[in-house]
View 1 (cartoon, rainbow, N blue to C red):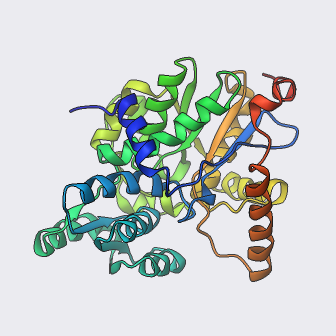
View 2: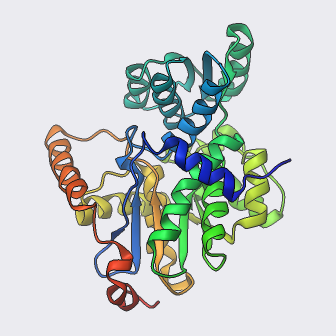
Length: 340
């Protein structure tokens, strides 16, 4: 099984550059924590990075119809990417998917099929065969390479080696970030984060082999984007080789972290995107010294209209100003924050 390389990430970064935002690092006041706000991407999730790379490569090879299955964000991303490349797209979503994720996939041009959670994968494969569509899996090598651009940006934007906290579902983001970040600086520690109620990845990491949880067990967590029952086979090979640790967080800490991100930074985080901030708040005393960067992986969550307006205003202002303080522009403040 071939692993994704630094060269693959570099090629993906170039391929997707015209479509994605190079998100900034935002410092949480009074802490050694920096937030990577991937909720600012066109689909409000990091998933667009991997989807654009994978779909772009398929379009180059003449593929005309793509299909994907996910809890919501990967499906939206594939739909968005297919639209940019003029491809037909079908997505399979669980009947537990939030309505706004279903509606977003349709808005991006996808034909949406809704099934019970346990039937997502088998339905996707059956439809792919019937429709002669190419499956874009969430841990395909091209998807992992695209996600790696997140890690490359963090490693280059931080002033010194530290820790990167990454949400984990099937492991594609964690795999890509680990490959890219350690290519820039091998001293960076990359740590995956899961809800305690969907910790199949943490179990796998401790056991040294992939361990699957029953779908019904992972669906207890509020973090709907992290309910995957098992790490992807290819993602696991990268995680086993490059990742330094795995942490878990409680449901209560996820909610508290999302509230904090909104209150202190004006960033909308869905529960899946807030787990990394929750991990910092829960485990900061035992995290290695130095700066800590938490990937806020997505912000697809319903809010009131007035909050939407406030966020849009704040986001536009951040874009105009460069999106926040860059760590290398304030190394003294970074070194003085927290215990690192």
